[in-house]
Length: 356
Ligand code: NAD
Image (tube, rainbow, N blue to C red; front, side, top):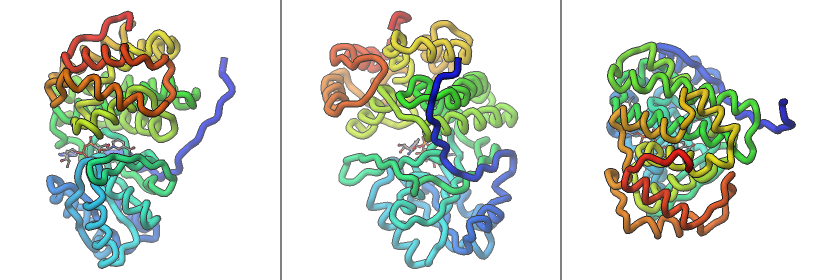
């Protein structure tokens, strides 16, 4: 039976395919933009320069200093370029860090954005901005930060290293998993979520072995888009809240942390969300979704232990305390002792038990 529900769609113009970056001038024209500032990380400056060339006269500048967690001092430096060049549009080409910088500029100026994602993180489809100031991370939800135009180009993902492809893909799956049991979940998002998980679970193992397999990359990027739609329209719970604490307060790497926590968060919530577990069972082809997610990561040589990405067993109590400082909704009651167990298992890299 279809339940009563509400569904909020985020307006964005999406172009998906191979070689679609060539359409960037059409997208700029659609936004009436004639002075575009291209944003990248230092590592992707060359890709940014190539896009600037495609834009021709409209590509008025390149700012190649985007950094993880959107530090406010970097945004302020970029704002100086925005003002100096009198730009009327910002374009982010890169992963969530670069998209975050474009969003931070849009938050301050309301300038339109073009996002060209080159990872599977999914920030391009969300009205969410996370930024850091003096080591503190805050999150804002505002329609102003949602990119107006998103260009998914399979070609640009071919060079994403296999290790980052795998963890970034697992990061995307986490968005879909939490949409399956979100407090504001609905049947529309659950269709996107199940399909997103299925496409990523089926494509990531091939990408880990053959990162330049174009058909598989196309499937993964499509799956990542579906998962990003889920994050953009649904509320989050234990998994994302925990990753936020681990990234923000313990400086753990974003995609790897999502990869490690996901099986444990699924096991924790499993008893409370039978319909979500049934959807994951279909998508993953296993009646033990938490174990299957752990095995998937391990088989692709992704990290499965927080100890391997910088967390110590001694940090477990502090992380639990920070997590539970502010109330948030979760389908399963949040019990400090059980969160500590979850984290201890994740630090040690133990496979989550079937019973949760
Ligand atoms: P990232 O953007 O930090 O990229 C990691 C590294 O990979 C960078 O050096 C980048 O230049 C490089 N890279 C990216 N694509 C590449 C490619 N195709 N080829 C070669 N190198 C490439 O990593 P991420 O995981 O995409 O993003 C993480 C950040 O995004 C975090 O700060 C996270 O909080 C944020 N995020 C925000 C949202 C949101 O909705 N606000 C959603 C997801 C992630």
